[in-house]
Length: 188
Image (cartoon, rainbow, N blue to C red; front, side):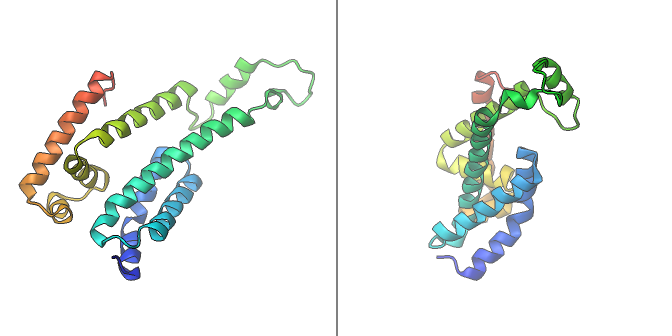
């Protein structure tokens, strides 16, 4: 069971990396901050009874789920809240061209086409799905090494195994993911 201090220390140690990764993923710093904070609160509320060694993976899973939930909410919100009248000009004469409106939005800095958004979201879902299908030890090694950016020794300590085992698990995970994603037509 993690103490309050252990939980606090853990959250302090991951907050910057979690924010950076989430901000990169959702491309909205305010939303990223909300997602990370909500994930930290969920970890503290629901998993305080877990040993400190389990906190990194639990937090990563909570953060991944919260990020995917945010994308789902955005998709629904955009579909429901989109109103054709918002595309009309200020004169309100009803004479507007939706394609011209969308073309002007594409020129905005940081704008991403719908096809790019959908492609990125589908790729992320495919990767998440394939990571979830990895054997437990491979998934754990992969997440700790490449998502949490722990070195081999730290990963071995967290997993309770040798550094050679970590390297083996990571290698197998990377090869399995590459093969599965290539079969789906995804190249990174």
